[in-house]
Amino acid sequence: MTTALSRIFKDSTAQAFRGLTTVLEKARATAEAAGTAEEAYLGARLFPDMNDLKWQVQMITEFAVRGAARMSGTTPDDLPNLPMEGETFDALIGRIAECAATVAATDDATIDGNAGMKITMPIGPEQTIELDGETYVLSFFLPNLYFHVTTAYNLLRMQGVAIGKREYMGM
Image (cartoon, one colour):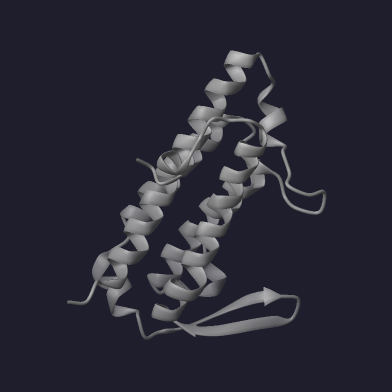
């Protein structure tokens, strides 16, 4: 039995976004209970040269929407650009919900039919990479999705938010 690429892409994104929403909700409640400003959590970084929690959420939501567009055959010039906004837990949770709905609405047959299409994308200044659709989803999209969701989780754990694997998994 083969699992459809659309199911891998959409189900993995949905679960990661459920987990991300759960850990952000717990962080919001922790901040409120402690009387701590949200920015103390949202501006947290693991290391000075790394991006903060807000950016992790903003980036991975845009990345998911752009990934869905790529797998739908959208040309690089026409990919959606989401503004890097969301300065509160509520705004970021809302952004996740909107982006999750966009990914969920992507046509399964189109994603599955584009498994062999070539995707060329930038990976740095004057550098591009070309992958087929299946490789893009399995070897580029999913590792990036999990990297940024895990980084967000770790930033919140570092701040003392009582979350664990169940929350991360969206359970």
